[in-house]
Length: 334
Ligand SMILES: NC(=O)c1ccc[n+]([C@@H]2O[C@H](COP(=O)([O-])OP(=O)(O)OC[C@H]3O[C@@H](n4cnc5c(N)ncnc54)[C@H](OP(=O)(O)O)[C@@H]3O)[C@@H](O)[C@H]2O)c1
Image 1 (spheres, protein in one colour):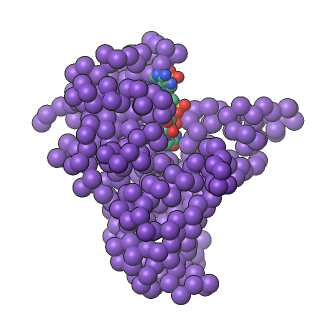
Image 2 (cartoon, rainbow, N blue to C red; image 1 turned 90 degrees about the horizontal axis):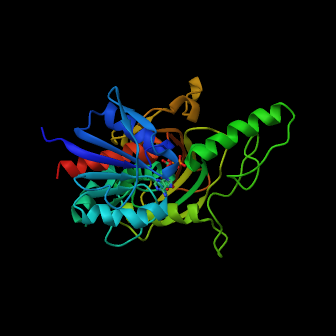
């Protein structure tokens, strides 16, 4: 079997570390792993299949001989280095938002639109973490009932803001419980024992950039610009796992039984829904898992053709590392 030289740009970050774990656990055919990060991490090591591999400082020559470059080191790093990787012959799979809406860059969730990979010109984008889990759930609705409108509110964990986000929740929680003063560095308000209805910066129309990403990326991945989406994105004091309350309005009425059936055969989705036994997904329970979990499925009492549901997924897995590796697997299969 052919083995690939795989670079992970941002290998010391929360997503990069998860990527290395996912490559290992899925037995991805890696011949050589090239972990890359900034000068801050020079000399650090990552562990892969029991071996310690030195992290190298990213530079313009880092992609010589690389087949696949997984990027998760921020938009400006991808903007500069993904084209260099592509030019040197690698396929660049980018986790940042930088290229997602470029018309010639496929934006891919393999279970939904793997076919889009074929048109790539060296760079393939991975969607926003909240979008990835939502489109997996929307896909069977769209195929069966044609989606008219989606109303989503998110409850996003601090790991979506990287290692600094996780550190801030931990230190603020400890300090608050010890009665000490807290500092806000990563988030605009305290995140411990709080929640913040702002992710990314505000636009003139009152939405945040995170909300607009969910709106635009959903249309691009499902290939339907007519779907109306509105989103409110909220940061919550959870370490790993994004949750979403989603209301889906379709052109054709779908019953709860039909929705359960559709979701139960959707690859990557697991229905976890039994109110009589208090069964529904929570981020704590589902962290570390690959699936997107759905519960609380019910008909919307206020509309004849709409469904409400609750969707939870590990943002570092399907929202980032797992999806990127699945893109690489689909690319490999041609
Ligand atoms: N967290 C998520 O759920 C999620 C989901 C989807 C997409 N993303 C995107 O993935 C990217 C990384 O996120 P993260 O959560 O893993 O962040 P993180 O934990 O803060 O890690 C950032 C990584 O990027 C590296 N890096 C930063 N500046 C660099 C530079 N100039 N040159 C080379 N490497 C550099 C860091 O290396 P050092 O350790 O050396 O600083 C570190 O390895 C972001 O663009 C984010 O939007 C994150």
